[in-house]
Length: 133
Image 1 (spheres, rainbow, N blue to C red):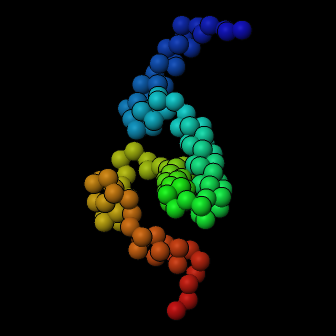
Image 2 (cartoon, one colour; image 1 turned 60 degrees about the vertical axis):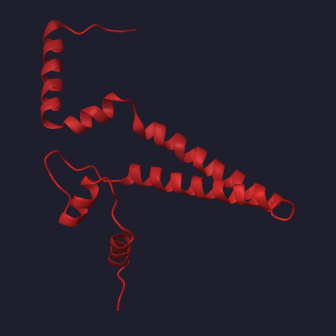
Image 3 (spheres, one colour; image 1 turned 90 degrees about the vertical axis):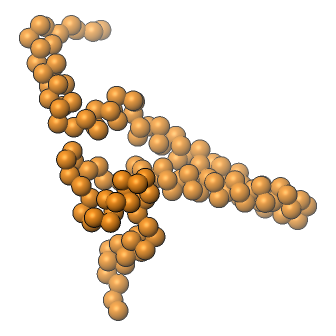
């Protein structure tokens, strides 16, 4: 059952939408293309299934066929990379509109379409777990 909005409610809703578009365009674009969170969870499941299928195929074929075993390893590799990418996309903190990443080199890499390097990730993990020495 749908309840129609009054003219006043429609006007208020349109004003709210306009203000949201003005203040956070990235969010509006992301949300207008559907729920990426639900799509990402499906991708996570498929990549996990692909990895498991690759593992079973590897265990079943490594003695009989080198070609199938290599294909299974490639399936496992692609699945694990897809899983990591989708998981990283889901966990990436959203930057508020008009702000930039905390470090200039990170901003430069992201503006060129590259992710943060392994050295930066290693440094972040060491600081998170309180590495001494």
